Image 1 (spheres, rainbow, N blue to C red):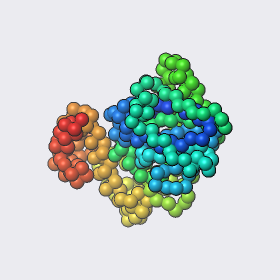
Image 2 (image 1 turned 30 degrees about the vertical axis):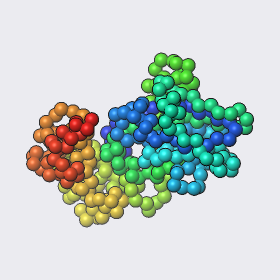
Image 3 (image 1 turned 120 degrees about the vertical axis):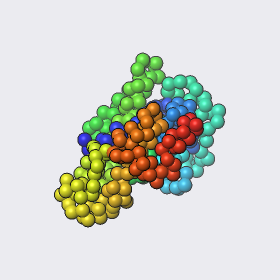
Image 4 (image 1 turned 180 degrees about the vertical axis):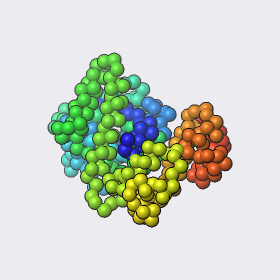
Length: 328
């Protein structure tokens, strides 16, 4: 399996749709903090990525600390991988001058407490714009390689005739089914939301210009991509740089330099971070002993695991587990 699939499989990606907007006239909204939405709909979520899929009409989106808006048309998907609050507004100069309505407090609770998908309708004059709003939850540390490679605002076209267009049309249909209370529609929408994210990451990776750096750029490199695939396929294997270099067809020094330039860390440092991230998930969610977890992620002794884990998290694994359990 390739490294992207391995990471996507490990981050426990979960999607949800909570709002169906149908807007006319002039409007501008400051979206609710993603964490507040998740606290009601998915309180166990570690990290939240808001997204909006425009299914009809057009609108603008912008980050709070950036003046320049991004234009969105029907079929466009926009995600905020870092979870930033943002403004959605009518695609007009007048709307850009409006003070955005802040969706917080009682207005947010009114949407989230209804259960299922809430509907937000405003105005009948002008062109109608319809937007499906949702979010994706994931394990932030395990998703770090992907999240750090993505921009804070990621716009992707879902208008082509391939998988992206199928996902877009399926979401629109499933939202309609959910609004009519058809059984199972929430589960379908969750899976489709997850596919949206996967398609967005794949599309972004395919359009990266040559010469860039970052984890997704590393996946596209002939040698580094193969090294990442091996490390993620077998994280518990007793890898050495020499062995990894032999597998990908480079010298030890050449792989080290190439890997560090693209990923930002040497191969063994990267592997340690991934192993301890996997271990942290097991410590938080399971009851296995420290020595069992150490062996599963590739450490021959509990002492070696304790040292590696403490370097990454600042605490020994047993202490970290108790603190996480205490904090809920």
